[in-house]
Image (tube, rainbow, N blue to C red; front, side, top):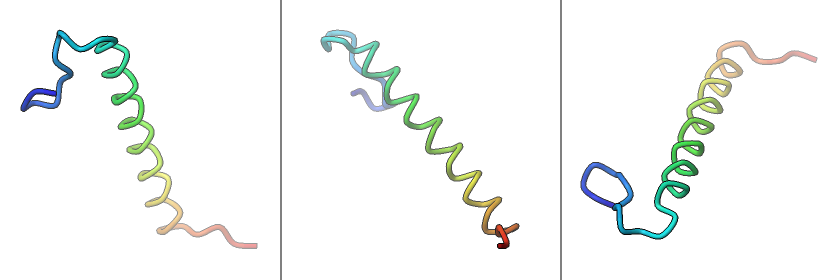
Length: 45
């Protein structure tokens, strides 16, 4: 990876690796938002 976090062009399957990293980051952001919602509004039984 370079300094900006991009996969270097000469890496085998670099585009796929970058896609997977971005998908992971998006899922992590989504889960953090859900966690904040549940902390603010806990589910009651």
